[in-house]
Image 1 (spheres, protein in one colour):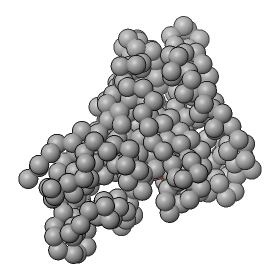
Image 2: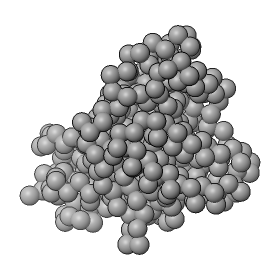
Image 3: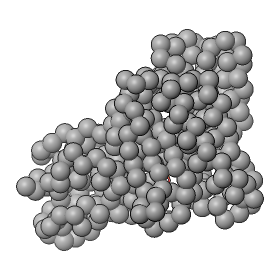
Length: 329
Ligand code: DP6
């Protein structure tokens, strides 16, 4: 039965093993496998309402009309849903997130996952087909596919297209984290452009393609064995190699800024002081610092002591995935 309107919420996800590079840009097929965690407290909520008549799709983001780029991403998701159903015309989409958009806090992943989930449900498609829903979400933004299943999620390229699958639920290893918000302003070079530029111009690209699958396998093993020491070494190295591809691109792109580097330095000091933790960063200056379950308060105190009030620290933990709020008006 076609429902026509639905609302869904989806979390941000942070990669421990990064998606960086596409083997097929139009289909957003990744060059390398990635593994991420969905996190609590950074959530996007989207409502999608399909009409029967054809027409241009409309989309608001945080209450304002979406720019052309965002609208194009949303439309790719809507088109994929429309192609799996019948009699669906244009859509009205409303998306809100409770954290800064485009500041390296995975807002596009959460937003497009929520749009995909809401559109899927509004079209009356089976709400338990999370794998298919995830592959639709990735057409809007690759990393969005990892915000559908909760907990630890993998996304792997394959000969017949990529595959998204849950690796472990949040309860398996409820890691905690502090998000050190160095900046809340939109980044200058988006991930799409950053990875494309690195792929075309960085002499480090070949090294990335060789190393990333190895890191992914070892990170999946560390997660399955709950080996925090192994995960620390692997996740930091994987993140820094990803950043090395943009720093060595021509011209260079820096997602880290001087404050990000101070945060990384603080994490190393905190670790030397005996508190288990590691950092990761995405295509923006903010830093995510993970610690074992139960140590989040200690980590937040230690980061505050090192960094003072100059940065904003948000606490979070590994959490669930998409939630469909059915039959919304
Ligand atoms: C650095 O999913 O934003 O966060 O598919 O071009 O929309 P597009 O890219 P996007 O890239 C995310 C890259 C990353 C690493 C990751 O999340 O794995």
